[in-house]
Image (cartoon, rainbow, N blue to C red; front, side, top):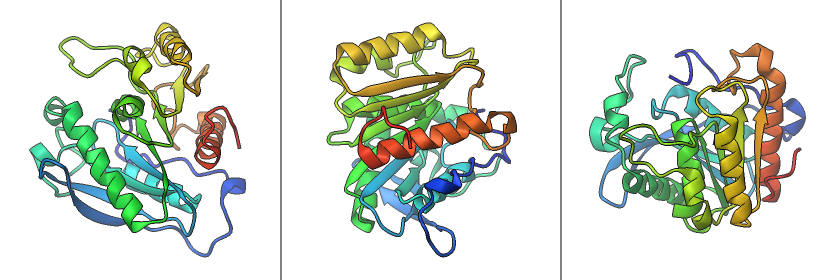
Length: 261
């Protein structure tokens, strides 16, 4: 599991928040994918702006962590929608913290997930002023975000937090560095240098693949950060969380993954 059940997203650095009255809220929505599947999502609208983000969660699907993260983005001026992976196998209801998610993860397919991203994006752009849309994901969703650069047309960019870069045994999901020649949207990859599941060799191969594809990108590893460092319970990694927010929001403002706010 990427996060403990009581984890909450780290705060956005205060100097990156626009003046506003009150906090950004959100709402549950039930969307329909291209194959007719109903799935749950959570939409949070910013007060203004043309940037939007589709949030691909970790293996738990649409957990409250990601609903609050969508609200964090909205408070920073980015319209956001977080979506659930498991409409085809678990329905649209909210789930308890002890939900056994792995049998459902194993039944996900790239075709289904990218169709759900498409439906989420369409709803985001219909209900808000978002016209430059990014895909951002964590762990399982981080790899999905990277692959979205190749699979989802006309994205403004993708951001992957510690997205898996290699292939586990019996896994069918594509490997990001292999797909790099097909990628079109700029890429920002953020990793924990102390993450044993994603090695420096993997990170280097991904960066080299993006470089060979001549795709604008930045692949950055925080030397002492663990997997899932972007979590307010890791107080010792506040500096890394703040820096990650600055990189992500600068990318969404400028379209350039090499910028830092």
